[in-house]
Length: 174
Image (cartoon, rainbow, N blue to C red):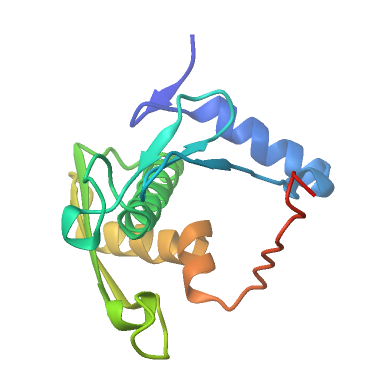
């Protein structure tokens, strides 16, 4: 039987932290995804052994609106990463979470994406509002919040300038 708070396996997380403390090189990990175009603006991302995650664009952007688009998935990735951070760190602090909701939105100008003007094609601003229902006091929740912001891998990735190398492979028919 495992010891759980917030449906988090405390022993598993503590075991991983202990392993990384003893073997620091175990902290260096590589994650991957593979994407296959499915026609039009549709594609599917395959991650580990999970069912493919579909992507599409809204009809107003020329898609068929069968799935979230990549920028919506980026917002969701940030929200999901924050949710993991709140669950893990609240559990480590003994804070029970009754409910956690994160609302995210961002501003994006389509001119660069459509090639109508040079400039930044990505989000200009991303906003998130976190609502935590807990019996913990406001000070404990604020400390939790600051810690999650300081340790979110997706949050840090979005805030930092990191190298992104995208290479074009030789066509299969050549």
